[in-house]
Image 1: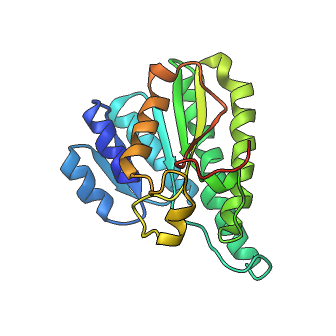
Image 2: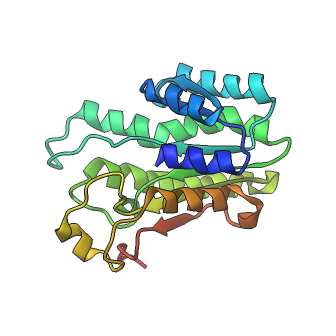
Length: 218
């Protein structure tokens, strides 16, 4: 999903700084003609470096996409304290830390932040216990953020994907999706584009499902 977002944003003439934990981000950045760095959203220094790199290169930050990997999974009561803390760092604190650095910059001209979350934040799934629990907290944070910073022209929203074609989906899972197919990474990227653009200028503090109708909660 991250790579699809990078491709889509480049086509829309965004000036990008990409960060990922693997060297493949450097190859992607070179292919797209943008800037890349190796780093982790769980490391405060790396988040600071990617913000500084964007400011040193472009002098402004208008849009941010927070997209992370998968947190630890397992039996609900057998997940260790360290695994819960790892998931908290990966799924919630990364957004908080990035926001601390970016909001003072964005206050000058406004901006939009999009977090790629999960449908399980609204419809908890025992297969994804840390994701379901902590991303529910991210939903609350996004609403509190909107309460505080909408007046400054800074928006934040969550995208809640269901099952996406970047991973194998079984026929059993596919049959449970009303659309009878998994989503594409391009469909997620297109939603990111919309939420970053002025076309969504009155949308903030929201959790936008992109799940083919999978979610059951109202």
